[in-house]
Length: 219
Image 1 (cartoon, helix red, strand yellow):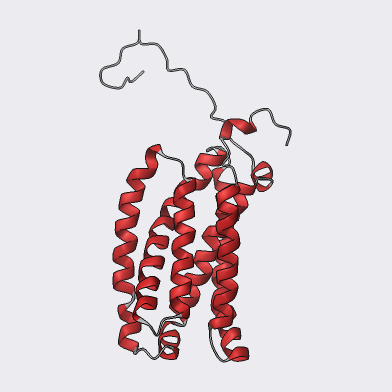
Image 2 (cartoon, one colour; image 1 turned 180 degrees about the vertical axis):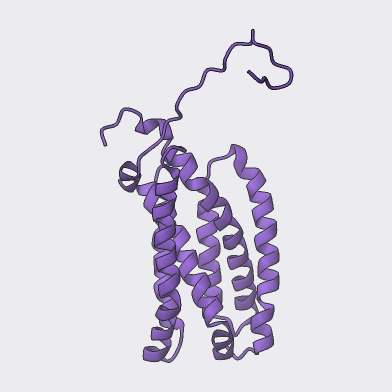
């Protein structure tokens, strides 16, 4: 048969073996699955809601439409730099501290939204959502492959994506209801802040799984 350049028929065939992997049923039973999924989903909820209501949110804080749209550029810069730097750092490090920093960034950004009328609130929004958004990409790419292996990655990450899409869909509605019933976005923001505080506390104590933990486990 055809051989790759540099190889001969006398070369030994490579030894292959299945990589340890968790099934979707096993993954759903672990705290790390729900921590990763809910952490990624809260970003989808907040990000979609803020983008959808960006002009109204800034107007409620006494800021102009120009300032509202200008917010995206510095946020994208922070997100890009964070993604490039942390994407390099995470190769040989645990994902857990990056997830903690991501949630802390989202929390900082949500608090910044509450005090958007102040200069420091705007800065907190930009820095927090920028860093959190950059780490969101890192976390979404690595959380499931590192914890559950490659074999059932599609259905595991698929469930996470479905929950993220649902969170993204209800985000704008949550903020709209808050505005309708409380005449401000503060109530919706406080719901998100409480959720982020709970997730952050959860992230400090939850243990990450190694895929080989799922070998020979009854499913």
